[in-house]
Length: 192
Image 1 (cartoon, rainbow, N blue to C red):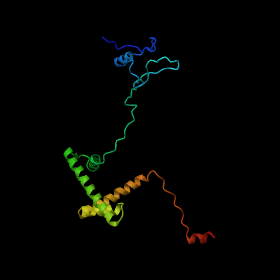
Image 2: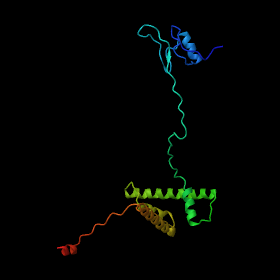
Image 3: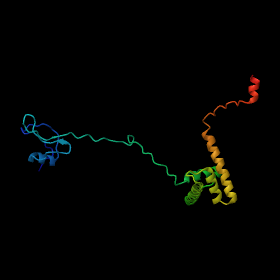
Image 4: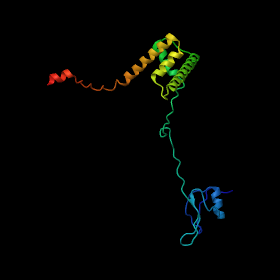
């Protein structure tokens, strides 16, 4: 029975290392083969002319990586679903109402379909104008064309109100720039 705990020896027979070797390396060392290894130096002659034994590099200890050490990957947000936003609107309009999973799927499909139709038509309108950028007027016209008369006007009014409220909230943290006094002809005459 072969032992797995053999040590490497040089040509004189003295122990140079006390590291355990694998059975394949031990057999190769005995036969004189194994001139190279994955992480070792090849056999060769030293400056004195004596043969050197195969010297293996010490294996690196396995690095333990915990969940805390791993960098977190940022997942791209999925904007293909409007579930969160539909639920927020439902709770602001009717607190006591609930929506089933099937109803949420239907509303999500309706929202995706309408946003796709509006963006496609607004893109076509921008292309016909000769620009590659959609403007607010393109989106407004697309909404009026897709939705029926009164519903389209209501949607445009609510969209404008939401955009103004968003712009107002973005500027809430910033101080407005001080207004410069206008120089008028009357003011100049009084100053002289």
